[in-house]
Length: 514
Image 1 (spheres, rainbow, N blue to C red):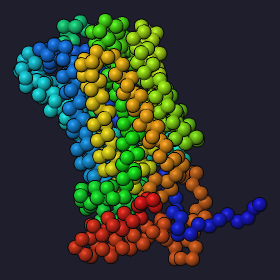
Image 2: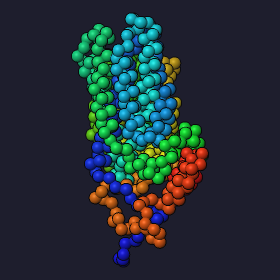
Image 3: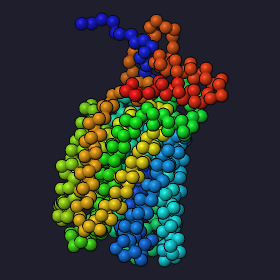
Image 4: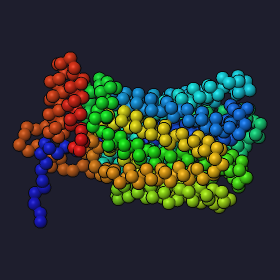
């Protein structure tokens, strides 16, 4: 049956459009900035078991590695604060400017780490400086990842958000891989004495040019369509307080908070076990218990190989999620953790072939979350509190449950002499993932909350389908948005205008389920 195409009234949002080249530049800027950010953040974890425990904690004996990993974990204490501070600033003043500052801060902290004197030179001041700089890195990282995630999601067309979201993790994995590659090259080329005295500083100093490139790219980028829409209809939201933003999250987005926390815990426990703890497990923990581990250079090379395979696959999986949905891929990863988490750890104790197989299992499982979660999380919050909400919840979950995993696992192994603890963590993460995915709404192909549907210019529906019916012509937006904007303008004349604007915008973006 055929007929005239349906015309949508004011109750249906007119779509927004972006040139494909603009979207690709935005995704590239976020990804390349992420390369710099996560190279900086990852270098410490790669060097921890190889040399940093001897440089900064030489008198701690078998606990030197635990203390080195504890300094690694110190960064996670600052991440929620950084996520909340930068996130709220990004919701008020724009994503791109804030993201340039996060890369700048991370670059300064990482270069400074490479200049810290050893314990033998300045004594206890050396590890204290390391902890301080790690916390500065953590403060920066708290605003970096969730800001880049927000930027890419808000620039991506609804039907291709999975693909462009995977670019972000492509940058993250590239940063980690680059850090591991530089570390592996130094270990292979330098004698241990040179590595211990000056060679370990080189990876930290390389952060400077990487950071400058990231800052340049982000400063050239215009802010996202969703943020521009928000400021056009409710400019007074630029004065919303931290307390008001927190109140909105607490009252109306509690389910989004719990779903975000569940996905982040599952994803990042898997991530930090593979990227931060497994090198330590292979090179230090297993040999200490008489098991067949491996040498430092080979362990790093194995990890680089797994990361390269993930790089080759991640955009394919992201594109696949635009076709089949996010949830089927998240189901796959969660089930794999429950079923294969312990066997993958057992394989690490079975010689080179077992280590390769175990790492491949972990990498494939991590891929399910890394490719899909960046396009899933932004759909849980509206534009007005998206960056702040993700910044706070994401980083709290990482800091409390995921980022501390390497330290807790190593301490548990040392205390109980049980080498299966990494597997226990993976299985527990999988159980959390199963529960979370069960309650997660499928976001694939849908507009972000608080934003108009977004298309590439050559894919947008016929503009005539969105002509207003029974009302005077309006440029765009739903009836609720128009009413909210009118209330916001009226409230501007009152002393409590910012709060009134926030109330109006809150009503337009509040989930129907409450």
